[in-house]
Image 1 (cartoon, rainbow, N blue to C red):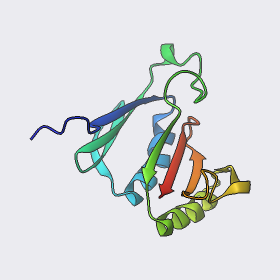
Image 2: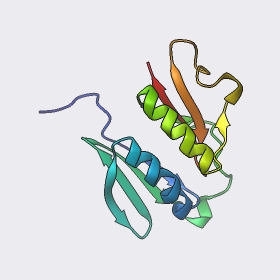
Image 3: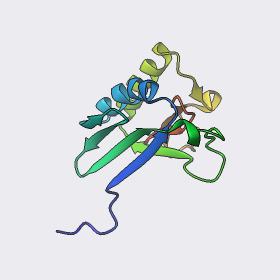
Image 4: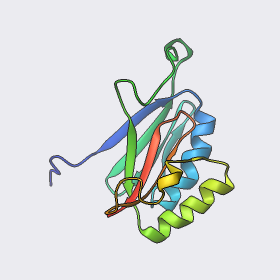
Length: 131
């Protein structure tokens, strides 16, 4: 069966693959992903039919540095329960990861969306939301 329109995978090139593995490994595990493939220059995590790939950017392509407000990827948003968002929020603080918009947390996206926002080591914004 063709799953027209559903996301198959996202591939993101990163400056520091080791830091990316540490950051995304625990988070994606909590979101129901499992390690799918790993090789010297990359890693992927799969949840159902969708997977996320992180690849080490070659040195010659690291300038200018990534910034989520430039053209390109701004953030990844994942569905999560309020309970999981609360648990991840505690884990983020334990890991020293800053919560974005903390003064409006957990309703930084409006009163109809319970969410937490933070950044990965490359400063890609991550959003977990419960509608």
